[in-house]
Length: 183
Image (cartoon, rainbow, N blue to C red):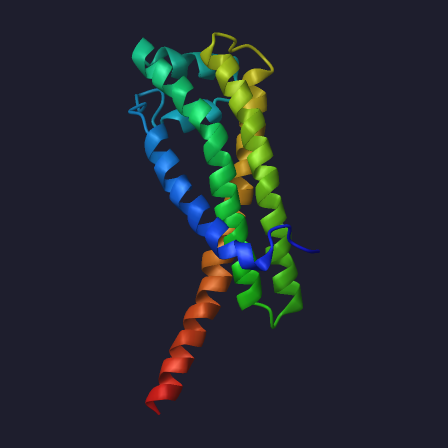
């Protein structure tokens, strides 16, 4: 399976998407943690039932609700940034793990899945905006919850692949190279 970003563009695209991931995450940050929203906006993403969603939103002041809605709108840009950053990191890790064709294929598969995570995040955002607009009834909480769970699973798998497999192999190669230079 081929990857759609040309090899010569991967480094600049990675650097730009990483920078935007950090900047937009900072722009989205809002003090939304309350007793009923201990995880901030993530508490609303995981509020599976209408009563839970109402409790989370009701625990926020009108200003916090406005900040939450603004953060969700920023997330439409952020989802493109983080998914591309992690996707490219998976491609890099697949290259590092290239000796094992099976592990490299997993990395490319995860790289594509990260864009599915972005699509799920966009659907989740629509559901969140509906809830923040007062429509906390079904199907919005369940839709946000389902999309969030799958999105988080894909992102976590991608990060585990990058830092677990690719990162360890890369470090091991650097250690071996250093040992060979010293000896």
